Amino acid sequence: MKNRLRDALNSSRADYTEIRLERSTTSAVTFRGPRLEGATVSTDEGGFVRCLNRGYGWGMASFTSLDDLPAMVARAHELSLAVRLDAPIRLADVPVREADVTLPLGGDVRGIPLDAKKRHLESLNALMLGRDRRVVDTQAAYRDEVVEYWYANSEGTMLFELRPEVTLSAVAVARDQGTIERALESLGRRSGWDAVQHREDQFLAAADRAVALLGAPRVRGGTYPVVLDPKLAGVFVHEAFGHLSEADFVYENPQAREMMTLGRRFGGPHLTIGDDGSAAALRGTLPFDDEGTPTRNTVLIQNGVLVGRLHSRETAAKMQEAPTGNARALSFRHPPIVRMTNTYIASGTGTRDDLFRDIKLGIYACDAQGGQTYLEDFSFTAGHGFMIRDGQLAELVKDVVIAGNLFQTMDRIDRVAGDFQWNEMGGGCGKGGQAPLPVTEGAPHVRLSEALVGGSVA
Image 1 (cartoon, one colour):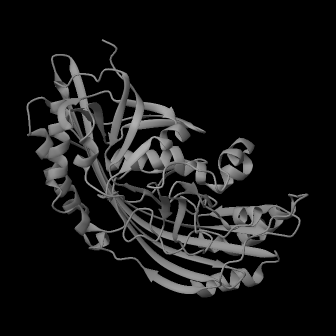
Image 2: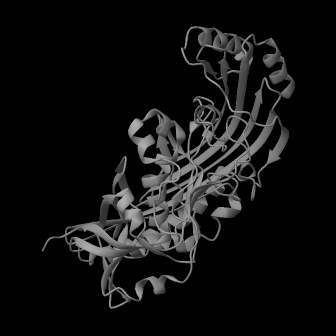
Image 3: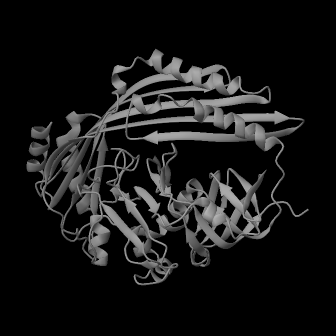
């Protein structure tokens, strides 16, 4: 394959050419209630070529037959010459590398029969169905993928990676006297079959929480001190701040450029935020991005001050900053764009209970059911919550929606606990028509001195 790539690069007449080739094997199993909805195995292969000529734009071509590679190189060159630019595109320098990297397979899923995967998921799903008579429906899903990946460019970089991924999710739906509630648990790792073993507690937790929410009151709307659990804090930093840190958005949006000025204070000295594509075994982890740039830990906020952003080679050159290894593509069908990898709030000090201790009346918001952001404004729905009364955890509540302004909210982060964890959930990130891209978030417990919480007005 590498000789094929070298021949294609040597044939290119463009000033710069890069090629990505992928060959993937995927299997998936889904249950809805007791019924098997699907059990599939599929393979896919193809490639993506980008060409760039001085004074012209990108020319791009994707293809599903490797025999088309030489023709697609020529086609991408022609397309580049069709786009004349006043300001030339430049790419920041990165070291030329040759590397073969096999990420740990953690039990190669390609050696596990589909029937064994089906039986495993069926047994986990049955735990939810049998947990309580009020569990009236379930959704259980398993998916794995192993991708053989090659990258080469005309500067001399030549890479091979073996990229595994596995996800497992459990949704329980409970009903009682006209009230319906649902709960979700999920797992996602750059690993294999070993990672989805001994996950019975995950499925039982989904069933138990759905049932518990049936009798939980709606939270009363108002302004409270709020403690975010690591899952919700991680989703908050990804959605509300991470996307603002992607340099293509910053560069192309004057309002975002004004907001995201390096050196601006975003919080207190206890707040540090970053994005780490090199962390071990997480869904956003890869040794190199899809431009051949090594991934790394990029600090975005250091002790409350904005110090960095996420870059491709193109945005790094435009903004005269260093590439960070954040150019990512969903597959060979897409161009690389600036994306997060594993975004986090760094650990602080103390415990969750320390954050509760001096709260007379507040809310402990847990999990993340969904959210919306627009520039600095956001709203997030927690999966569930608890009241905090006189410094102690109290009753379960539901319909907890937290809304606010990003900058005000980050200023109100007054405590960060020392219990950091990566949230290995099985979802993904969407941007530019590419979804769901594997990412991970991480955080400790985080306390907001004040936040607007929507809920019942009675």
